[in-house]
Image 1 (cartoon, helix red, strand yellow):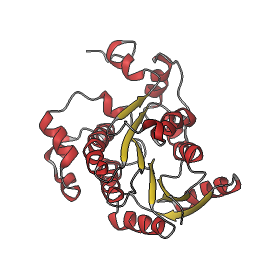
Image 2: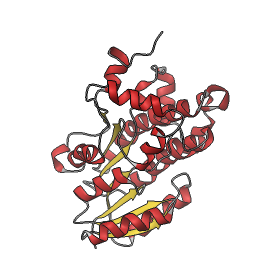
Image 3: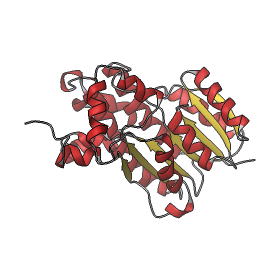
Image 4: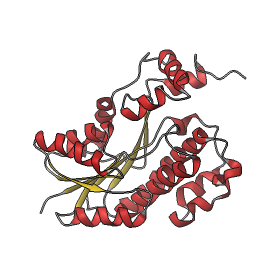
Length: 276
């Protein structure tokens, strides 16, 4: 029996992380598009990793449970990488909330029930969650602790309160960070750790969709005016994830790490400040 890594979202960021820490584990990579999972698994297999692709829809609890069950055929679940999600240009409001908000909450909950002692998890959030005005403490607590099957019924997430797909995405990512805090407390009872990473603009196929979408100029302006002066790479996200998924970070749990080249800093205090 081996330690098992569950990895959701067969994309560039997930692969960069998995390559750093998955070499001695059985990797189960899940994606709603099984062809994505198969393509990534082929690349990883040819690089010497022990990996199996599985079709998995993160917005469906049964699908998540099937992924966990598949992993448990090989050993205990030791690592979670959640890089699944849809962007504001890729999906309508309802889908963003179902996938990015509800799906992530269910995944963290279900993996938290089985994660082994010493296990570690990272979920990929977004700078977008840091860009919103502060929510009330009451709403933050609702996002963190509401039972998963009641999350999408929260008043703050009803269609009349969500302006557009970007707002839905921001709410989902804010929820991810709050949910990680609450779930980290539960994971801690099993001797396991959970953190989130909030990347800025990272060059991936998803980001390229955004560059070519209706907000393309907005994104190009963002990385031109952020302190780093460029978008980031998946490997730069993996640099931080690698730390979080090793014993060097044993005192870090329930935290979120903003990796955005300073874009959020520039949004509040620099050249990206919105005009009032």
